[in-house]
Length: 324
Image (cartoon, helix red, strand yellow):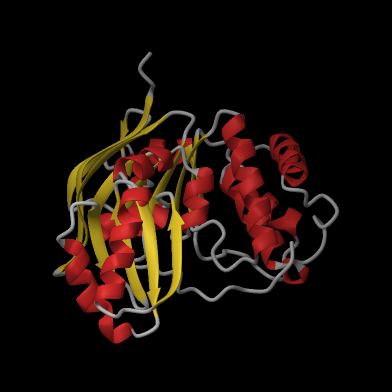
């Protein structure tokens, strides 16, 4: 049975002056799935998301959300979605409950409806006990949970999360993942941006790898890893000056599907480790390339990213040491 399409993006391009932030993007998001836009900072993820939610107008191309055009029917689209921005919109002097009450008024919810929704959401994100404390007393994880509650207040059909765990410590990130999974289990469609490989791998039903404003590949994490083909043998050389020599020697051999130099050695995609390892060791010995370390693993999402973009994704945002 065909899955209902919640979001349709067709040939989306967004330019600022002479800079093209995203170029000719086309993809679909299905109802009830978690769809991810994975890429490094500046790849075009947030521009794509903000265009879908009507904060930006496409330079060309079209976007529809639940069948409604985001330019012609922007007001209607906004009533159907929730948005948790990357930048925290927290007033440190307001309490958690006051944040939600203020938003309830902005959404024109009746007092009774707002009170009911706020009570439900505070319980959902486990902020009941801290609801009447000033937000300045909240940890990073608690602030992010309040952000998510704010995004859910209008009871949206689709929730958009822009870098939902950026800057959080590991424990807080895992808690946010739990809430995202719970929302999906309740039938919500979720679109998220992230530059964390593990987050995309763990949460997303499907994802688009975006780099330089273009989609490089799209599919489920499992499909993308299987589609890469072959396993990965990583070598660390004692003398990095010999990396190029070994790359040249191995690239020509039939057992090697792809050979790529790294800062400390080589990443080699192979058809069969059993066939490739003897050839790798023979070439290393013949060329007097001393190996410090050999690692073998199945394809990972990082390998997929490297294969499609030619470089490794960099999580270059400093991690905050804050508890939930």
